[in-house]
Amino acid sequence: MGTQYVPRDAPIGSVIGTANASFTYKHSSEIECRHGDLWETRLNAWPRVTGITLPQFTGLDLSKATILKTNVPGVGVVISAPGRSMTHWINVSGAHPLVPFKLSNTQVLRIVDPVETRFTLIKVSNDIPMGSSQVSNSQSAVAFWSGNRRFHSVFLLATVVRSECSLAGGANTYLEVPMGEVMRRQFNGKDSHMDSKDVVIPLTNCTAGTYPTDQGWNYYQNANAHLRLEGVQGSAILDAHRGILGLTSDSTAKGVAVQVLRKDGVTPLTLGQEVSMARLSGSQMNIELKARYIQTSNSAAGPEPGKANARAAFTLTYK
Image (cartoon, rainbow, N blue to C red; front, side):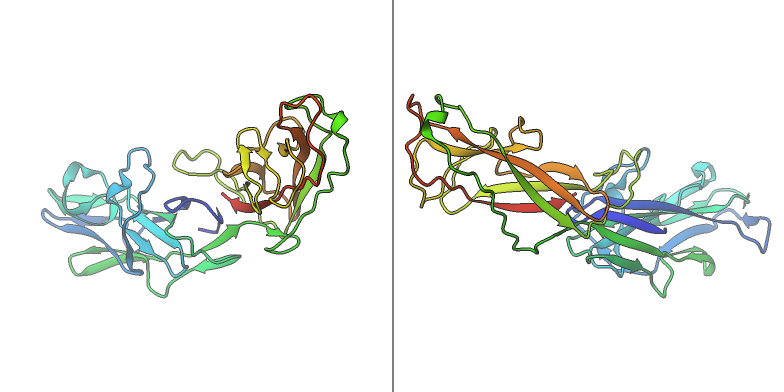
């Protein structure tokens, strides 16, 4: 399957990638099937996973799919074997073309077409390791049988890479934004504000990845960095949709708050929920915001002077 990328925080049940394998029997130009002969697919490699809702492919109901755990934590696989016309076959067990299944032949026929196998990698937990992981097994993933004869087996090989970045300063990065001194007379009533200050969150060691762009089954078509800001140390969210964050409990100023904006300096950043900020690109990138003082009181004289600090904790997710 080559290299497949999955954003670190993609939802469980996300399709990581798909691939098809085609096998044509070389020892004979055709396989003759007699009336009542069985054509069977069997799963070999990994234990099964339950309790995960899968997206629906066009023409294929995955609600009956068997998900297998691969050797890579957090990565499962669904196997199907399309291509068998059901005109002369009866489904004996399973949910053809989802593996495993067993078909019974209703008349003499010959199989001359290639036998197809489709692998679909699924995120089954949040345990996918950082970096690159190899999907492999000494046993085949699926085997094709008729009676007691195995016709061929298919092995699954893939590389799964978790897309994400690191904070340049580590997991406990502390960012300070100097707001400077302002005079109360610079405000002119409620919702008046000062000039914005830059807020930059530096990201490094980014693994962007490449993703299918025309797959309706996928939860994502790229890896985006999402940001969530929550008030701490007494800084309450005063208006989440307008990005207004109250002052810390040790602040002495009154009637003023800090408003967080997107890079354009106009659009408020919604607080308290994940907001998509930027598509991962390159090995290093910055998440850029703006912050400014905004008057929250109705006083024509402006806010009450004093220390005016705000504090927020930020969380980055990638999906």
